[in-house]
Length: 510
Image: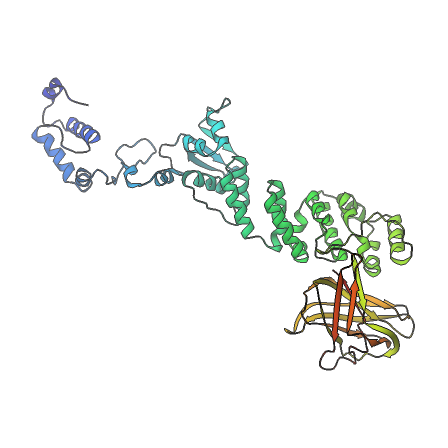
């Protein structure tokens, strides 16, 4: 702008409003006050401005930001020359994040009282997201400058905008899932990756099922696989967590189909019953056996009932009312007769193992009698390859059918560390056979590590084994050999040793 001679001639000293306007225009154009050749009064006004703190600083250094807005507009605080205080494009765009300055669109994010009105800039959003680009610039572009997003959480939307404006990632345990949803919704894969990495770093057994459901919902196969691996390694902890009963039926089936779950089938059945009870509640159905069977649908057929012992099946599934009478009868026959009838449930083993269950007996002969007074029977052993120990075979009464209470344990000998314990019971029929007593879940044993098997029995005198073997080799159908080496435990072991005593049988998967 410039003033004509006519305009200059019309200017008269003392017209304060005109002086102020001329000074304002001069500063706007040239960045220096008092530039115009004005009267003494006008120069005085310019001089007064230049001598003030803010004016003097701007006259000497135009890069110094003003303390007050130079160009105010209704409802907007605009800082003069803020751009000069930001040394990079990233800083300038970060300054505009969640800022009314230059914004040309508003988002009403969330529902009801939790909704927030968030300003944004179409150019920035369109540059970072194909969805926003289509929203503002596509053939069906919106003309509205206020857009409602009721399905998005405000915190997640702000996390998305912060990333688009500055590449900064602000996510936490409470917001990561909603941020992942928002990043998916607006096609920002880089932020999706950050969310998945955060979830992966914080993945534990107690949240694995919750994260598995989210990973399947958001189609994140890498995260889903990591969740499944965590569930395999710590199945008991995972199914006992609160999140297990909240998963959907398809996720439940995906887990039950796995051969790699590290948990006894009887306990897995109990967890599935808990899920069915919760699902009846969600569907507002009475939690009857029929309704539990109905909501489980195909999931019930994925329980591997033949992997249970006869005692486990009889105490749980057989009395649950969730199996048809025909299924119960066939399974009882499967446990007790040969040849075994066909059943509708797989007997393929789980526990990250291959092949079938195996067992070895360390005695060549059975004698009687063996008494119990509260002292544990124990024997030490090591094995030449990795196995998962299921439990022991124990001798029963010499006086006919009887019941025993028993506590079984497995220790890592050198560390005197208990790896598993089960306080349970078993019934015997009076024969010299062994009777299965199992841990609640398989116990991984490593090669060439010394372990101690212990059993503390309460009951009548029993049979016992003699002519014990120091080395016993089990050969699988495939020809693989698993060798056990036994030695006596120090101390009082109720008389059990390598040569004689109780704990004749080890039951395991290779």
